[in-house]
Image 1 (tube, rainbow, N blue to C red):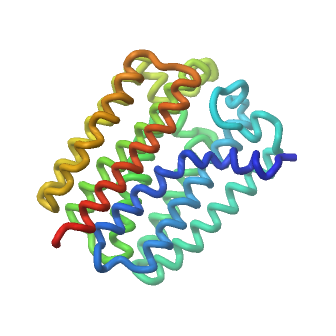
Image 2 (image 1 turned 45 degrees about the horizontal axis):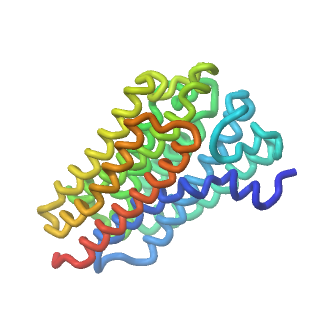
Length: 288
């Protein structure tokens, strides 16, 4: 039976920046209109992230694709927890997301119920079900949509009941950096995924292509941030993060592998949070 520490490890807390960052910038853009619904949006985002981590652990574990992996503990694959218990954990956090999301829908728009249902379906079928789309190179598309576009624009919407061009543009750097985290994770697992026919984008692109793709995502994050100049010129402060981005890209392009990629993965999460902090500060301090 898994210990509390192992359950926490299985939740993969290092992936949580991908859930926090879009809520942070969406709330910052809401400005004076920000209210308690931003907290509920954060609960939804965090709960979905933890749920999908447990769901992936369960689905990959029962398929046998999680054996002898580098990186965080796999509860099912390592045998420290039963598949049923990990599945229940996933459903528990899906339930939390559903309750918080329902409150948001009832106080804003019932259309959010449909969007929430799609998010849960996407989270479960990423590696679960008979035809998981995460095994068909669509993981990055889903991450960009749900942890970039929908999370950022949705957070802004539930607090202002508006959708603006700025909210869409803000989702670009946040979304592509979430994709960079997933892309680096899949690069780390490329060889093992290829052996079990898990065709992630990294497997299809190959080692060199996956490294180039990661670098392009970091470049898009910076370009996307600069595109927000019309909102506030302060967004140029994201350029101070360029040396950090360049160092990450250089290490990846130079062939970092194994445990070095784990360190770079954590640092990519830190880069996303740094972007979120800088963009949020620029938005909060701007006169709008």
